[in-house]
Length: 117
Ligand code: HEC
Image (tube, rainbow, N blue to C red; front, top):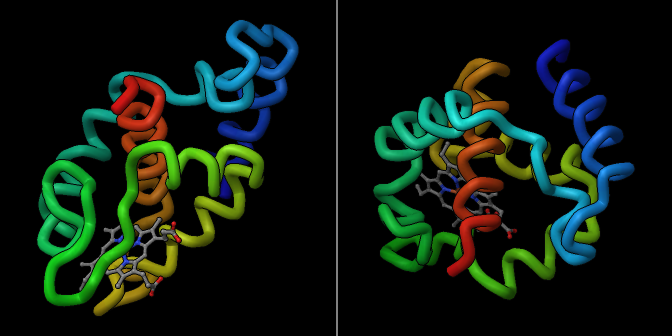
């Protein structure tokens, strides 16, 4: 949980910096290195259902993980809730990845959503 606490502390910092209002909460909470590691994990463990471009669908009707609807749904929730949701993945083996891997995945999702869509 230490890594998650680290993320939460950085959120506090990002919050006070408040740049673009709609992005303030998520801004600057991940590092590019975390996000890149997250991308590798995503490609191996998540893309088969959520698709390489995070568009979801497929046989399992996996959720969309990018775009206005996803952003709207999670932007006002705490990152902890989003972290919890992805800790219940992959659907076929919930919680099977390491805590660090879920932090990296969270970083990857933030990067993808903050980069625009
Ligand atoms: C076997 C298919 C499958 C795999 C693999 C999978 N998911 Fe999912 N995921 C789903 C389905 C189906 C849903 C929607 C229903 C549910 O939550 O059970 C979902 C929901 C989610 C949600 C909640 C989205 C929302 O807006 O409610 C997140 C976040 C998520 N997945 C992330 C991941 C991540 C990260 C991985 C890789 C570690 C992953 N998933 C792997 C099928 C999958």
